[in-house]
Length: 147
Image 1 (cartoon, rainbow, N blue to C red):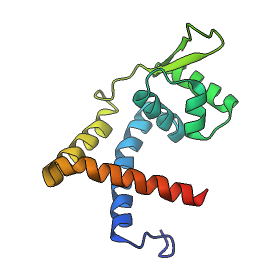
Image 2: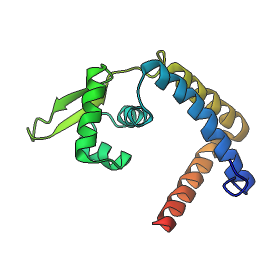
Image 3: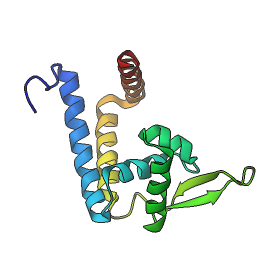
Image 4: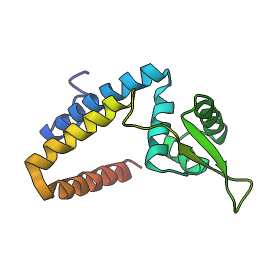
């Protein structure tokens, strides 16, 4: 990373280091499953949003409708998600993950998250929720300013 692109504040550096450490655990799982970064991001989004519609997944990833269709097809083929028809709108469907993040190869990512949350809780106690809310607000405001 060039000095020009390096984060300048201690907070930015700390968040960058956290992101890199968590990404290392994600990369290990991704390599074992032989899926792309986008496929892994999609899978994690589906895990966090069971029954998500493809349009929400498309919007989250910033890809085309055709791209999300291909992506979901790949994940279904690999046995990572299932596609269920919408009972109220047969043209639509819902995507649900069928992998357990506590199992290999995802357990490395899950273990990292649990260790991090444990350390945060030990350091901050009930204030950890306040910090999470603050970081969310700061991120949302930063993104909104760049739009």
